[in-house]
Amino acid sequence: MRFEATVEELLAQGIAARFRASGDSMDPAIRSGEHLHVEPVELAALRRGDIVLARQPRGLTAHRIVRIEDGWITTRGDNCSDDDPIFTAEQLVGRIAAAERDGRMQSIQSRKVAQARGWVRRVLTHFSRRRQRLFAASGVI
Image (cartoon, helix red, strand yellow):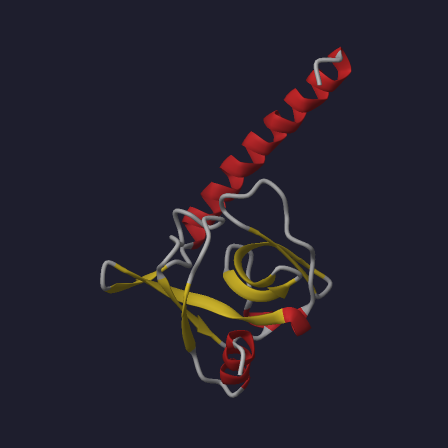
């Protein structure tokens, strides 16, 4: 049985699962190589700032929710400037409850930290896009 199918089956039965993260898209909240604990979750229990595990075109992806509208979920990695493709509850696998860091369980669902990161990211993205438009208008790029 494939890893993805095993995790999905466990969560569908209401059993939490654990897996090793790979990649830097969520650094520093989630570091590559850390073990993540994922739990079953219903769409109604999710809030902006939660980190969820979802089926994306590239495979299972743990990213932070930036928007929930009319049953559609938008996520983005903390280290990414672009949103992931939107998805519905059918692609939702679970919510990341904690990470094992230095041998200890650590919650990574701090909403205040997520909100602050989101605000900083929006400001930086705004200025980055504005700079790109200015360069494009001047013929530099």
